[in-house]
Length: 262
Image (cartoon, rainbow, N blue to C red):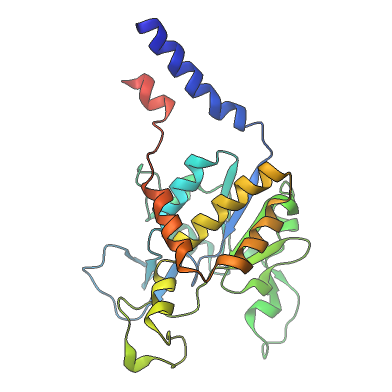
C-alpha cells in the first residue's frame, strides 16, 4: 500500500516539472488603479487597506487569491509589477499583501519595476504622464517574449510595441458601495453594474488570463493575441466574474513539498 501511495505521489509531483519546460509567460501588473487604489478617507476596519509612506492604499478585491490561483494552475507564469511610483513605495505595498499560502506579493514577484525603469519620451509636462513616459518591456525584461507577455494597466498607452497591453478595467475611484447620487461624476460609476464590475475586476482578469493560457497552448497561438481577443470580447461581461470566482473556489492541488513534509 505504501509503495503504491509513494508511486502515485511521485507521478503527481512530476507533472509540474514537465510544465516547467514550457516557455515562460509574463504577466505584468500595474499598481495604481489596477492592483491598488489610493484612498482619501481611511477606514481602520477595512482589512485590505495598507498605509505606506504616509498614504493609504487598498488592494483590489480578490487580488491575492487571483494571483495564487494563476500560479497554481499555470506554473509557466511569471508575475511582475510595473508602476511609475517610487521603488520604496511599490515594494512596501507588495510586501504588505499576502497570498492565502502566506507568501507576499513581493515574494512571488518575478520582477518589480518602478519610476526609474520608465522610458522618458517627452519632457512636455502639458501632456499626460503616460504619454511622456513608457513602460518599455523590451528594455527592462529582455528575457521576455512579446508573444508570451501582457501588460495589464489602467492606461494601456504605457505599452511599447511589439508588447501588448490590456485595460485593467480600473475606471473609477474605490467605493465600498454604489452611490447613486454620485453617478455621472468624474471617476464614479453610472450604474450599480459598472460599480460591481470594477469591484470584482480581478475575477475578470483571472478568467480571461486562464482561458488565454489554455487557448494558446491548445491552438498553438500567441498568448498575447489570445488575451487581447478575449479582453475585447468578454471583459465587460458579468459572466467573466462568475467564471473567475469558480476558478478561485475550485479544489486546489496540494504542493508536493507539503505532502512529503507530512
